[in-house]
Image (tube, rainbow, N blue to C red; front, side, top):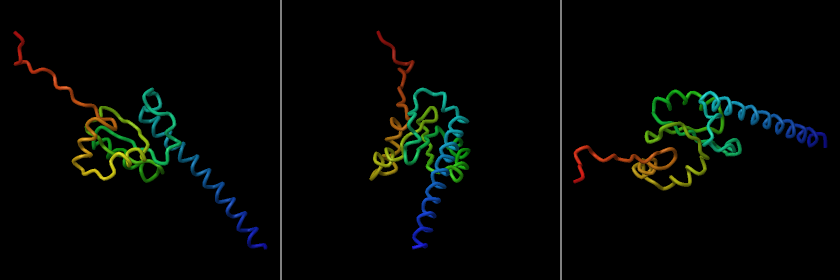
Length: 132
């Protein structure tokens, strides 16, 4: 009977520690987003801490390389580069997974042109076209 009591106390203690770790990790995520200037942006979903994993979409590989060092020290965060994006965006990773599942790399590249931060390029009328 003493072992069961000790095991219950241990489980309760571990659960409390896990909750503290989760709260500290949420603070890390918030600090990173503040440093990136995302906290001031109105276009971002404010419920991001409720997501299982947060996908951070960055506009270039160089920005991705700068941020990759934080992937190991911050749980529940993932990064991808979308060269079609004009700024950093955040999304629910589960949404990304469901929309890119069973797609080839080519299809994903095409998908990123207009989704997950991608902005469709609007070609302007060339100068050589003149109306009569």
